[in-house]
Amino acid sequence: MRYFYYIIVAIAACYGALFVALQLPMVSRTQPIEAALPISQLANPGKALTFARANVDGMPHMLLVTELTGQGAKAIDLSVMAGRDLNDPFDALDHFGRPALVQMADAHQKTAQSFDQTQLLAAVQGSRHISFGTNFLDHGTEVHNETPFYFPRLTEPTPSISSLPIDPEHQMIDYEVELCMSFDRPIAKLEDFDAARKLVFLCGDFSDRKVMLDGMPDNEETLSGIGFTDAKSLPGFFPTGPYMVVPDDWQAFIASEVIGTSLNGEPMQLTTGNMMIEDFRAMTDIALKSGSETKWTHHGNPVGLLPTGRIETQQVLLSGTTEGVLFRPPSLKAKITLGAKYAMTGRFLTGMSGFRSVVNDSINAAITDKIMLMPGDKVKHHSSRLGTIVTTIKKRNLDMP
Image 1 (tube, rainbow, N blue to C red):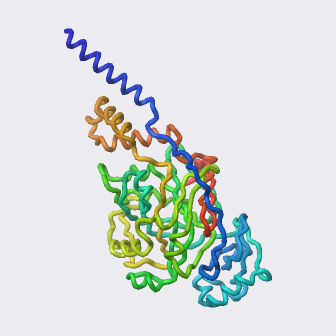
Image 2 (cartoon, rainbow, N blue to C red):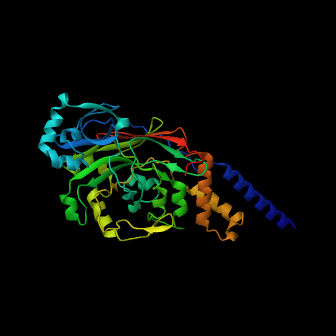
């Protein structure tokens, strides 16, 4: 009888300890970093021309940017000078020639106009893009995945100043800052990449981490990108910077470009392009070799990385982000505590795996503790030569789709 009493006391003590442990926060919001985020300056026109697309009287016009003003830019309206629509910076380069554009940028005083950033349009168009994850080592370390992976992203780019409606009771919205690249021709082989002119711009990358976690396979040790397409393909999740740069030397430009993120004015992310594990040429090689894979899904339907077998001109390569995102995998303490809960509450009898039980409890904790983006938050992505992206988080109207 005495031993039975001891067993009851021990069980009660375990449940009591579990109850106490479950009152402790399982997740916490990422803290700001000690850093000075970059203030964008115009790239040297002799080495890298800067363009933008602006809404002028309801029509998109191509601009040659001659000065960054903080609130926008001074620029030459190339569409007016050409007397026709210009599709993209490459079209402008073909029409005017690079030497003439460099000369225009140097003698801008007589022809430059002021454009507010709210007038500037998304850098590119197109709805199918190629994203890389954990392509900066420090971000791979913080999310316990140090091998880059890739996945298709199916969403339209949005302008550099926008608002993002969210449902904080059912979504876990996170930010990322990334470098992006597109090309003047389809890329079917690495020789095409080497010959192509490159367009470089700043990108924001928003994710619904709940959708991502729900879509990941059980017990996935190395991220495959499965679950990421749905999590990153919602409207407004892909804001692009206001400026597009065509550098003479893309490698030197990327390596020295500084990017970062602030949340409500507090620095959260900061890195340079030379910290990428795979550069854009290596990313292109990986995408071309893996383009026929269809292991990802979007709204339940299988999707591939490169349906045409090549990177099209409207497809964007996204670099991945650096450390400082809000999302963290469950800590060892959380795994032990939530694993004990899984065993002691008999949840294993329902057929749910321990992995899925811990993931679900972590999702609930993140939503309850409000560690992800909340209505009223302001996310600002910074760069040294590519401008800024400002996204204001607001509460989604229940009538929105």
